Amino acid sequence: MSLRVIAGELKGRKLSTAAGLGTRPTAERTREAIFSILGPAVHHAHVLDLFAGTGAYGIEALSRGAASAVFIEVDRKACAVLTGNIQTCGMAAKARVLRWDASRNLSCLRNHEPRFQLVFMDPPYGRNLVEPALSHLHQTRCVTDGALLVIEHDKDDPLPEPAMLYRLHDQRRYGRTLVSFLLLGQ
Image (cartoon, rainbow, N blue to C red; front, side, top):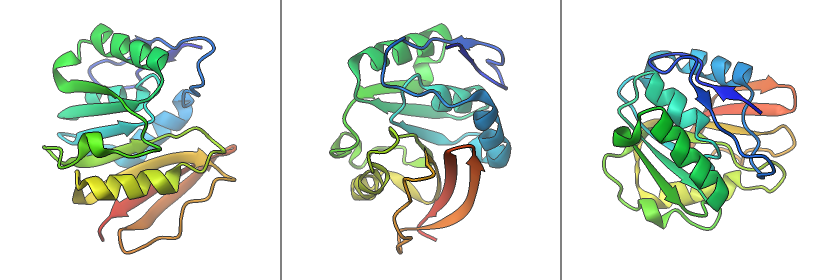
């Protein structure tokens, strides 16, 4: 499967994927719609890309003017592809890849500075990983108050009930995929 950066400094740049990986790259049309909704929220943001796979979300954010991006991915092969994509795009100075299992904890980000203003989360479908990842993210204290979280999930993988930690700001459906926009701490 071929992916490309949709807009910004890297517009049209191809991103590699690896055959046989358990990753499920987001369709370009869905990614384009998400970034259209985000608009200027991407500019100068410090971005976290959880369950990063190929890194398409974080790289797209960097292309559109994000200040930095941290990518979390557990699969060794996916990390290699992701690192290659970042290097090919010339974004190594603004990017950091961490091989880590976000479903277990995010202690690798505890008190990370600068704190993240924009978080992309695209966990594997059907494994109920959104709620634990949100909990782990809160425990790290690495996200600013008012941060925007963009969560891509299967329509049958519901979000946990909103708590005092976040509120559902918007939600869009693209086929079987739901994209939920959460605001943290408001």
